[in-house]
Image (tube, rainbow, N blue to C red; front, side, top):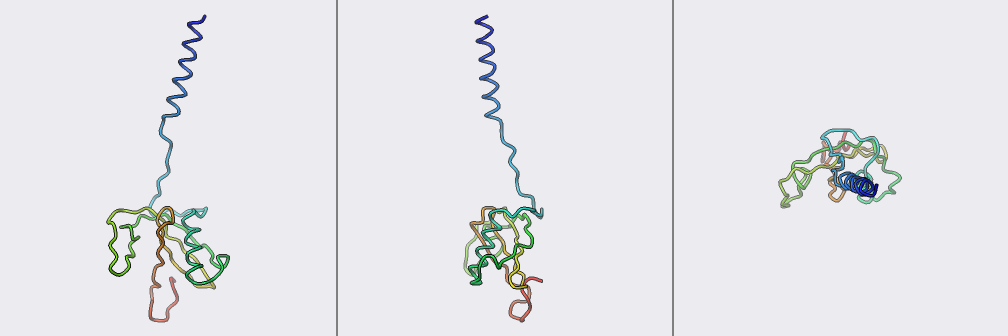
Length: 130
């Protein structure tokens, strides 16, 4: 009986150990996939745009968030004389609206890097992001 009890305990310990060591199902971003609940990166983009425009964050509406893979660490929008790591960077494209004006903001996956896209008609008096 004692031998059976020892085998049973060893089996339970082995099962628990194997279960704890199994890989978790990590969800990786897919390019172009629309997101229904705004990730933290989108909320950070919302805060960033509010600060840039000098408005309350409540005035910045999140219109759409899509997962995106950017071509480099500058999210495809390097600043003048900026050196960017040429590595695919997962993140989001976040469409925001402030006072009936639309803006497109790019972020990395964590919202640590945020870039505002220039309006398509910059310098021509056109509205930002149609």
